[in-house]
Image (cartoon, rainbow, N blue to C red; front, top):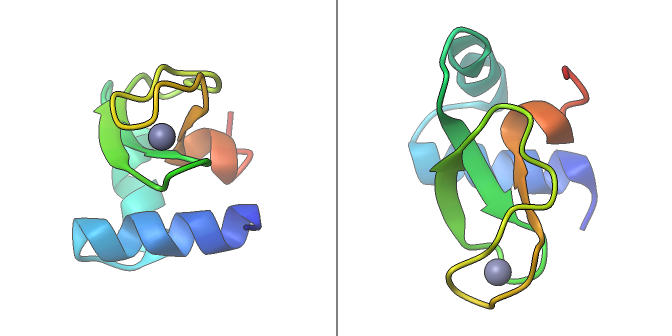
Length: 71
Ligand SMILES: [Zn+2]
């Protein structure tokens, strides 16, 4: 999946569109994150890039800001 597809999936999970999710996340200390392996969504640090996934056990959880290359 591309970063854009992951962002869309994450925004869908949040019930909003990608732009508003990112705008909101820019001002938050905890932001929406997604596992690039199993697509489980969670919350985490804005700069999360290799976070632990509770669902599949891989270090593959990334924040929406990292996916959007804002950080
Ligand atoms: Zn996972």
